[in-house]
Image (tube, rainbow, N blue to C red; front, side, top):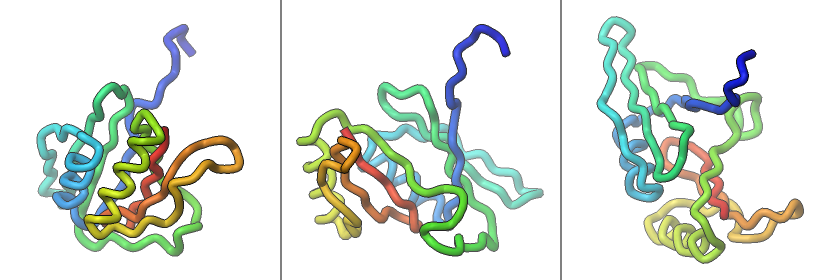
Length: 132
């Protein structure tokens, strides 16, 4: 490997509703979506989302006939953790999401390993951890 530090450039996930997922991340996490990419041959569409102050991006993707994951505790994707900066922000965003109809799965609370977080069931079956 080169001497350039390794970093995660992006993480990608599939969603059944691309536009609702983009709207969720823009509305609650101040993401900015790049231009829509569309490959008509593969019936594939995606956006790259960037977040304020962050270097890693999130690619959200869709195509017809996606299969749901087997269970919430299956191999692969488990959740995305997004830092909002303070316990007060965790509380405020969790309350806002709850008010807007999203299920709060846990918290806000301090975990056994010292993280202050909440976990929310987001659009499209995604699990989002909101942390300091």
